[in-house]
Length: 215
Image 1 (tube, rainbow, N blue to C red):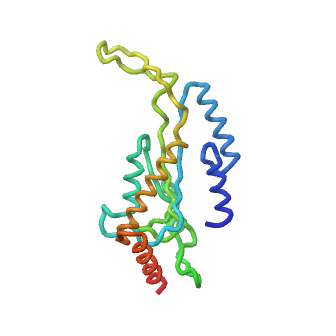
Image 2 (cartoon, rainbow, N blue to C red; image 1 turned 60 degrees about the vertical axis):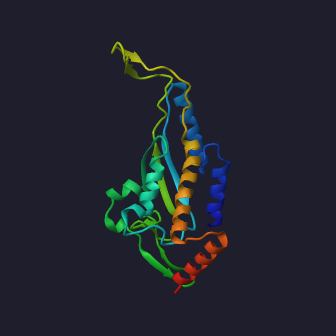
Image 3 (cartoon, helix red, strand yellow; image 1 turned 180 degrees about the vertical axis):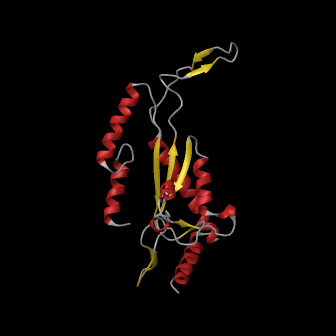
């Protein structure tokens, strides 16, 4: 992680909304206040980035071992998550292939890499050594202070849904949950790639793998 990235993530950690851009954070606060005043709720788009992931986690052969498949399943299992994407995400469907796929580069001392990271660190179901970039969409909280219409189970008459205590937006809290969910999946993938009963064994296997990749 570069110094600029470290500063960015430090701002994220200090932010009330887990946002690294102060201007964006201010706009979010204003939007939340408007929603609160009008009895509404908000969802949002969350992004998780995983640094220093070794190339080769996951599988390009078996569908149930694909790393992006496992991450997507885990993320969508969290309540209120309605979509997941990697890298460019759905924008990839609007671009030409030459503007989507990442050119491969080579640098002495650093080895192979990608000039861009549109794939979001995963290709063919396997990590490629770049930063894993994952986005998830969270729907707004369903309990509203201005409730929607529903139907009474007994009378079948149209009525207003009951008013319950409601937060305006749970996206910052959900981000903490997703960080741990993603970390769990990555840890499982690491242990699948490097089976070990102790951290020393894991470190030995990891160092041997790094040496192998440099061949």
